[in-house]
Image (tube, rainbow, N blue to C red; front, side, top):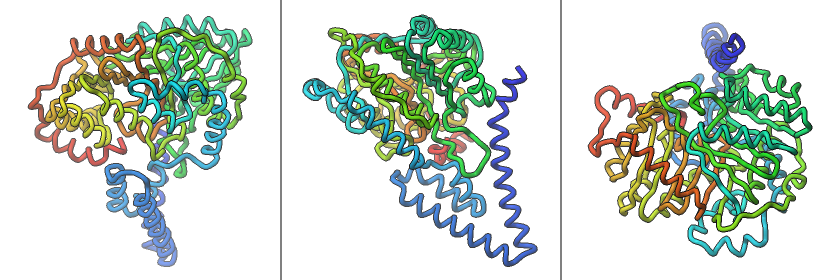
Length: 509
């Protein structure tokens, strides 16, 4: 318990140190102004130069003004520390060395993923343009012959995960944003250690920020001593030169060449409803068997190499002949392998494509509703052209500020006829979309700037897959226990005033 408390205070400690550094810099400038005109002049010149650099960099960034406005305000109204805050916390492309690692991963993966036979059928089915778009932006390709199972909550998913982990003979790849100690992790940890001792290769990747409040700082070293090849992604440290937004928000498990999992669930007891946090915790996951597993492997290895600074043998894992299943539709597992701040924002475009393509009905679930304006406009446009758009958000939110700002988005959606629901049993953490009961997305991508702009994410786009009917049925079950917002809903009073102010800063939330 003491260790966990210590871990829980780590993020707070880091931020205290960071803002302490900012305060010291501001204090030095103030003291120099009082006691040393020459030093003060030099510091002011440095600050002005930094300020101008930040403004020019911000103006030239390939983003819309909606993303830039909060930083312009910070730079204008905080002349001393604004540039330092910007340099520390704004969105930055990944470093050139990291870009090189990702390019090498793509080059190594392409020969095994670009199947010639798929180029002939990829253009022959409805919604092909969605898959072609993802194929162009990522190096993953749609596959046929997969079998996909759907799990509508943690109670269904985790027992299946335990069972599949027990079957591992060759390798286990394990990547999650959050790993928290408790019954779920204890069960998985025991299996992973035992499998490692049996000679199974176990690789584990966990995000440093996601796990900072859950695990001791050097827990990955403990796992290594137990035979698990574990790494932290993008270590979070109290220095002003760090990049703090580029998080690994993916949820991926690959077991041998037999099973692959992804979706919205992390590794913590609340996801299995072993404990209660914010009411009932609703999430979903899928399990894929078949040739689509190669996309999971390539996506995992790219991030693992990024964190470990190693070079994996991609051909060893990807050169494999998979069992194929009949009449199981098309599936494309993809990751935003260009990394955060990729101008072609893969997650955003995938949602927009699905919204635009819906003809009759569209279901979307997200825990956070502060998307870019273009997604809001697409949802309103779909409703205005006669599509029945159903959007489900949490009834009990975990982030109150984000929830309040999201109410302004709800207002606009309601004006266009979008049906918006609060999942009254508790916290809806599911990130999924279904159009016309024919095409569906399940993954880790929220409808907020964190996911769409700042994080490494992943998901699976499916067409004509039998489990899509189960996903649609799950949405309908959720709506049955949810409360629909009245069409005239409006935030009022002080809460509305606060939401309007905070809305300016939604790209930073």
